[in-house]
Structures are given as structure tokens and as C-alpha cells.
Image 1 (cartoon, one colour):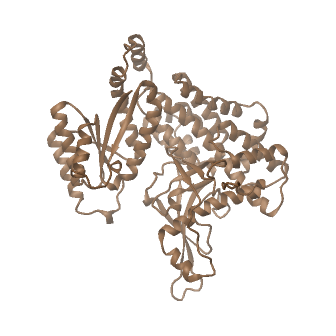
Image 2 (tube, one colour):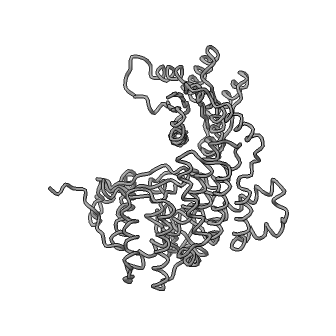
Image 3 (cartoon, rainbow, N blue to C red):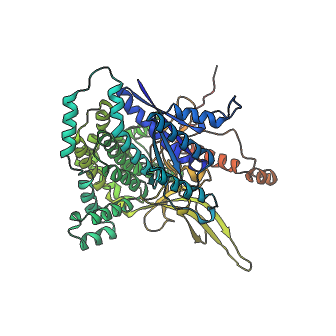
Length: 568
């Protein structure tokens, strides 16, 4: 196994970018271990803050000397130690030809009020890089950074791959890949863009107007990009995010890694669409069950039990079966549902249909990826099947999602009624996670539920509350921006923790019941003192998600929270 050491140098302000990059390296290792390559990441969080025989920065510098690659990330400042780490790497590179060095400067919106004199360190450092003849690169988001660095890895890793094996490289195969790469046109997303633009034009006025005014849009590169943005922002938020990522991958240079990720994202985009409808149906059914006792058939009960007790992430076909049973419950009991268009999917779920067949084929993509047996034609087929799925879900372009972060009450002197201030984030496809500038405030005469993700059509007061199946992790954590996560599974047979998947990169977030109980509401002094601490309010928010999940479980399938205590 060939180990490649990668050192990341950056200031604390880019901690979240470093964590996202770490998750990317972990995913790369899942793929590269079959090729005898392991990427070992070194970043300053990994070093102990204990007293050592040397200055701690010296330990960082020694790690740089042992590294094969060094990444330096910058945003609004260049810290003393980050600068030292760069120059350490640069001097070692001049002496021995490694490590390879990349400098990435984040080009994103900055709160003007947060700018300090430290920004001068950034300008000075850029000038020094120019004097050294070192060219830096800008990135706009963590997705953008990962895509840029992945392209660099794809070019470099073959060197390590050939040196990690005692077997001679397959020259015939190598030449074949080279020839194939030269003749392949980057046609990813063409079919998807064309079909989805037409599909949502029936529901989305902007898409309809664009098509009417630009009949030849597909022949104009600028209009193609406009069409993609219309689709990304046309589909309801969480689906738009997945399409954005797919479009981003499609624009990369052709490579084996690109094919793999394109296949993965075709599959996950279809799954998220089906999950969204399932979670909306379950949330609304929970409300119905509290008021009227809906009768379930044995098969419908079994599917719901499996959903609430699943102890591993389900695949597309499992959610397709859940969707069919939920739609049958609504149809048989004549229950009204906000996303009523989804009921039109039911006939095709009962028999062989283009929609069902497309879902089945997308589900088989997992086997292709696991066996590393995919080809360009598999990407083309996956794109076609995803287009079919999203065409059938095109009615979702009429809906919107928002994350209600906080409700404030504002009442001025001599104001008889006052107003509620709804602090929320509108979730659209081009949203960037953790961007606190995306917050909005709406003035209303009455409140809505806070810390909830809701989906609506025309009036956001007529909505479906998706909590606890879709949550805004950052909102619950009382931090900036939105981090929308889908419920994945429950550790029913273990610690009862709830597992969620972040829609941007599928990283996991785990919610567990805290051991920090809120004081009784009757004791106002104790309650106020407890709530004054931010960490207590955060515990309260996550405990509420935990309790809501088990309340929904008890209401819909009659199963109380399982105990993990030893009964002996």
C-alpha cells in the first residue's frame, strides 16, 4: 500500500472547509484502496496541544517535511504560522523537489463589518507569491475547491499507482484509455438539461418564458448555463441542490473518477426526490393519525414498521416500496394531501412503468460502482433514467422549502398588537451551506413553528412540517447558514441514535438523547437561568428532534421507544 501524505495549512476561520475536505479524502480512500493507494491527511487539529520537547509549530513543520503534498487555504487573513508553513514547504520543495504545493484563496462574500487590518496580510502574501513565481488558485465554495483539487489528483495519482505495484503497467490498456479520452466529447448533462427544462416549463413560469424566447438555446453556451440555473432553482430546494452538484460534475474534464461520481449523484438525486415525497407523506399522515384513526393493511403496517426500525440506510427500491404503500393509504382513506400531484404516481408503482423501471436501473448503479465496472455508456444510461424520474417529479418545481430558524416578537411603544419576525432561509438549488447572508425576515401577525423545515406551494402557512425527517442541523445548533439533512436510519438494536445524511456530501450527523434535562416549566427562575445558556438551548433543540421521531413512531405504528437497558 502506497501512502501519500497531504498536509493542510489554514487559519481557524476555514475550519468547516477543512472538515469538508477531510470527508472528501475519506471518500477518495474508499475508492483508491483497491489501487494500493492511501491518502493520509495531516492537519493541525490532529496534533496534541500538550507540552512537547519542541515548539508545537516545529512539529507541524516536521510533518510538512514528511509530506508529499501541501495545501494552503486562505480567506480573509494569513496567519503567522500558516505563512511559516508555506515557506517551510517551499524551501523543502526547492531542496528536494517535493512536496507539491497548492495555494487556494477563497473568493466568497464577506461581512464588511468583520473585515479587520488582518486583510492586509492577505494582500501582502499574494504579492510575495507573485514575486516567487507561484500561481495561486481561487475557489468559491467547498464543492468548487474539491472539484479543482480532484482534477489535480486525477493527473498525479497515476504516478503513485504505477509505483505502488510490482506488476508492470498494462500499456495496452493505458493507451486505450488515452485514445478514448481524446475522442470523448463532454456531453454530460445535455439530455438531462434539455428534458428537465421542458418538463418543468409546465409548472415554472420562468422556464416556460425562457423556452418561448429562446428556441435555439441549446446552441448557445451562455444560454445553456442559464437553462441549467433555471432548472437548479426551479426544482424544490433539496432536489435543486442535488442537480447543482450533478451539473458541476458534468462540467469537469473527462476521467474515470468523474464517471464514478456522476453515477453516484444520478442515483442519490433520484433517491432524494422519492425520499422527499415519502417524508412529506409520513409527516402529514402523523398529523392525520392524531385526529382520526387511519386504518392500515398488514402490508402497509409492515412497511411503516420497517421504516421506523431500519438500522441501515435504505436503497431506492425500499423507498419506492414505502412510497407505493403510503400513496395507497392516502388513496384508500381519501385523505387530502398538499402535494396531491404525487398521487398520479400510484398507477405506475403498481405495475411495470417507465418510472419504476428507471428507478430499478438506477438502483443497480451501486453494483457497477462497487465492482468498478462502469463505462461511459453507463453514465449516459444513468442520466437518461434520472431524467425519467425527475420528469415524473417535475410537479415539485411548483413547491418551495424554507428553514424556519427563529421566531422573534417585536412590539414598539403604543403598538397594540406587535409583529412576529420569522427568521428563515429560503432553500434553493444555488444555496451555499453555512452562508449566513442568506437569512431572511418576514413580518407576520402570528407565529409559526421554529427550527423546522417546511414545504409549501403558494402560501407558506399552508405547509407540511418535515421535522424530524428533514432537519436544518445548523439551525438547531444555532449557528450560521443552513445544513439540511435527511433522516437515514435509527440504531434500533444498539444505542437508539438517529442518523442523518447531509445533502451536500452525504456526511453523517448523529442525534442522540442528551443527559441535560430541561427544568420544569413551572419553575420560571430555574428555566430562565437554564435557557440563558446557548449550549442548553442547543441540547433542547436536538432533544426535541429525538423525541419527535419517537412520538411519530409511537403514533403511526404503536411502538414505544425501545430500551437499551440490560433486563437481567
